[in-house]
Image 1 (cartoon, rainbow, N blue to C red):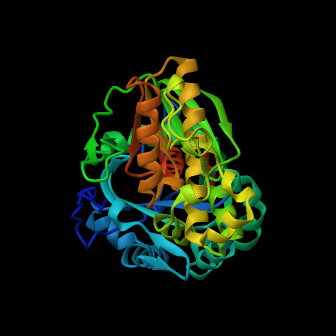
Image 2: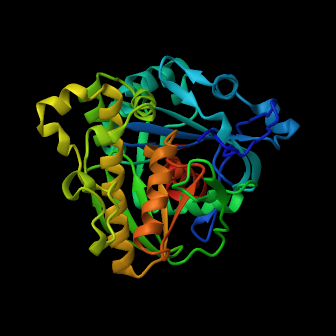
Length: 400
C-alpha cells in the first residue's frame, strides 16, 4: 500500500512573532489571571525520546514587541526557522497547529530528539542563554526526575515535575479540541492492501475509552471522563524493546532505520505459523493458517536461520511487539467493558504497519466489537499537558 491519501495537508503561515511581557502575574481562584511571560515550553522526557512543545504567539502588540528582549528573539527565530537542530533534533512541521492558549493565539511547534542526546539540549539552552528568560519549566516523564540535577547545574533551570499520565490525558483532550483538522482516525479495511483507507473519527464524546500509550514501554489507561481515569496495566515490551532488539539483530542505529528495514522484510520467514504446525487452518478455534503460533519459532532451526535476512528479523520483531500490545489492549478492553481503544505514542510514528496490524487484530478477534483509534500527534500529548500546566498553574510564579 502507498501513502494512499493518508496525509492530511496543513498549510501554515511563515512569519509569526513572539514576545516577553515580563510583568507581574496576578492570581484569581488559584489560576493565573494573566499567563506567565514568554517563552512557553512543555517537555516530556521519555526513556527513548525527549518531546518539546513550544508556543509561538501570533497576536503580539506593538508595546509587547518593544519590550521583547534579544534572548527571546534569538530563541524564537532559532526554533521556528529551523526544522533540524544539530544532528538529531527534529521539528515535526507537519504537526504544527494554530491554537488558543492562555488567552493568546499562536502556533504549537512539536520538537523531538533522542534522550541519549540530552547534553545536546543542555548545550543548546546554554548557547541561547535560556536561563535569562526562565528558571523553571514544566516537564513530565521519567527523565524529568533523572535529569533535573543536570539541568539545574548546567543551565540554572529547574524542572517542575508532573505526572506523565495526567499530562497525557490533558494533552489528548486539548489537542483534539483545538486542532482544526481531524485529530482522531481509524483504518477501514485494515487488512486489505488495495482498499485500506484512513478515515476520520469524531472524538468529541469518546467516553469511556481505553488509551494505550506506547513509548519505551506500554501503559494502559481506562478513561471514563476528563477527570476520572486509572492505569489498569501495561507491559515492558514496547517501542524501546523493538528498537533495542533491532539494533542487536540487524545492526541498525535509529528507529527510522529499523522501520525502513521492517517494511522490506517478511516475518513468516522468522515466525512459526499455525499452518506450519497443522498443515492449514485450525478450524475449531477459527485460527487461520497464516496466524502466528510462535514468534521467532523458526529460528530454532539452523537452515531457517541461514535464510533469514536483516529485514525479515526487523519485520518479525515489529510484528511480535505489536501483537503483544494488541493482545494486552484487547484483554484490558474486555475487562473494563470498553469498546474504543486509542493507541498513542512515538512507537507509531512513521509506523503504518503496526497501526494496521492493531486495527485488523482488534476488529477481527473482537468480532467487530472493538475499534482501534489513532491520533495524529502520536507521542506529543504528555509534553502538551506539561505546557498547559505551565500556562495555567500558579506555583511557577516564583520562577519568573
